[in-house]
Length: 216
Image 1 (cartoon, rainbow, N blue to C red):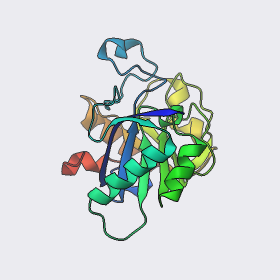
Image 2: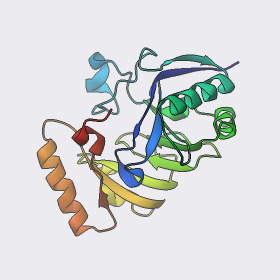
Image 3: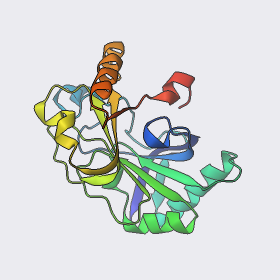
Image 4: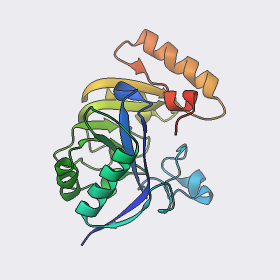
């Protein structure tokens, strides 16, 4: 039986992209294929600007879950204890890289539990069938295998030629977002992303509004 490793799971509002403001369970899987998550490995990682802790299973409502049914039941409990009333139960599978673990059996179990399912992925793995919302955030120096979905969210700016916005404009996504890189140059990054969106209206600005209002 497959065992799923989950860093944390909690109810909050989606803070980024086209689903901003929507209540959801954030189901954060442990592990990533572009960085170990350890600071000593960051300088040599394919993705070295990640701002998320996805190492281990010691976060809020984290743990190891034997089988898709057990994890789906856990996610439903987290949703119910988060006190939402009405509306479609929604879970956002994130990481790390969620597609290392998210599989058709878990998708089916989450559907049985009543969830609409979104995923936030780096796009290096093809998404399984049955997902309701696919957000791809491509990274420089990483292969892009998931070339369609609902939104493409590009961290901006990235210096590498293969991570420039124009590379992705012909892909089959409904929404194209630039998200300013969250580092010590954040103010300049926001200004640069806003300027790019003004000059290239195919792209929209995505801000991490959960950080602005103090949500996890």
